[in-house]
Image 1 (cartoon, rainbow, N blue to C red):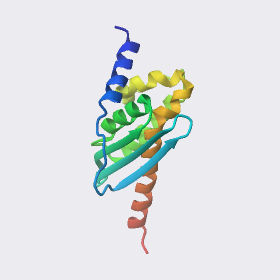
Image 2 (image 1 turned 30 degrees about the horizontal axis):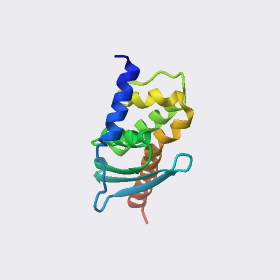
Image 3 (image 1 turned 180 degrees about the vertical axis):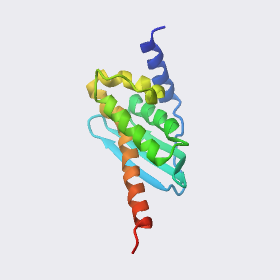
Length: 151
């Protein structure tokens, strides 16, 4: 079995059986994202314990690639600090847009998604959940700045 077939299998598994699907009651951060090209809609909820991502849930109405990416992202983010998760998101999105770049070991679990970068029309589907996460990171920084800035 080729690595491409294995990657397709991983993506299909995440699309059919999404991990961390659903809403969180009283999330610390929420972001919504929409891909008008494909019609994908996504809601991301994060719960933090200090600055660690304790729980990450997604609700996706869209294509299988968007669903798989959200599922895989949720698994990668849980347990990471917001700083480390934001760095991972930056690396992921940078490599995703560079067709011939080498995948970082940091992205090992996301390699099946990297295999889709040659399909330009699918990059927005892969990126949607990560864009929502980046919005949560911005809200996190705004919140921490407010609490650390003297009045």
